Image 1 (tube, rainbow, N blue to C red):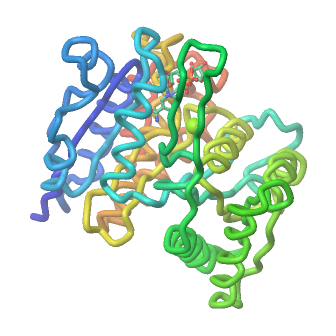
Image 2: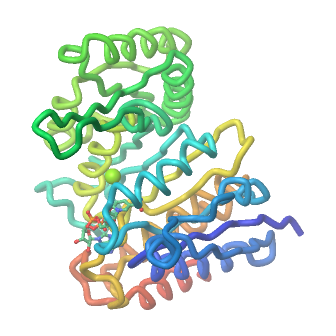
Image 3: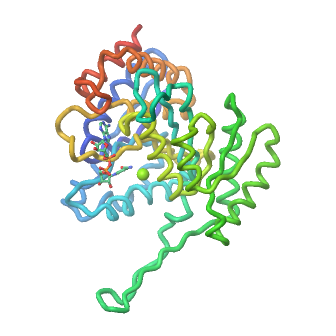
Length: 353
Ligand code: NAI
Ligand code: MG
């Protein structure tokens, strides 16, 4: 039987609650057709408080023997967020060449959008976010700290190779979706170097995809459009920073941060890709057993899809849709009273049917 080796980093806060839920569902989805072998890594904020590091020094080399990484969330009120993000999440994406951040944003039937009158037919987008360079490349520094001359510089890096490969991935994805629309988020009116370059390279790639309707929008305009006309958007191509912001809007209008999954993908498959819920560690509800496990479960399904197990992905997705659509079992973020365990049980039950 085919066996996939999965590195598991449950991480902090509700990561420790939703990842075990996801693993249960993955095991059930695999039953009879393939196997997942899970290896836990204790990295994250507790590890940092004990050792002074977010992860092992050779963490990335350790990852190479796995087929995929399943991540919960990283972030703890006791550790500054720039340490957790900069020492762990961003290096993972860069070192493992996961240059695509793929984030579906769908309003599932059974969830009320904060947008009045919107239904599942109106909100079905996916963001393809550049995940390795751009505004989050990490280049820059601070000078003359603590003096009146203090300064900080943070540089955005955009390469032809980086823009071209992310654009190509997004257009290919758009080509396979029924509406075949691609909206590129830019800001070339105000950023005359990087974003004009972005627009030029995206427009060149667009020529290879004549069957996809391509349009660019300034990021502020597309942010508004996601709220006022979400039904006009399909695939959204965005830089690292813009995609980060737009996907929070996308998951908010889809009803809850507790639902949206994400994949950090190396399409060339030379290193493992990493799948995670897009939400953080939610310290406000951590330890209470009420976190919505759907985002983590859906991220697990995306991982199976990436590994070539599309049928298992589809089984999980359809179970999620049936549970959310049933109006009976819902966690508090969706207006219900169910616990993480009850919601997970409901998904497992729906998969069995
Ligand atoms: P957050 O996503 O953890 O929480 C925002 C709000 O959404 C909270 O009210 C939370 O209770 C709720 N929420 C999130 N996920 C939920 C779920 N599954 N079920 C029910 N409710 C849910 O974002 P926040 O509060 O800004 O960040 C908390 C920590 O997480 C910070 O340290 C931050 O840096 C980190 N973070 C980590 C991310 C990652 O690991 N990729 C992503 C975003 C934030
Ligand atoms: Mg974010």
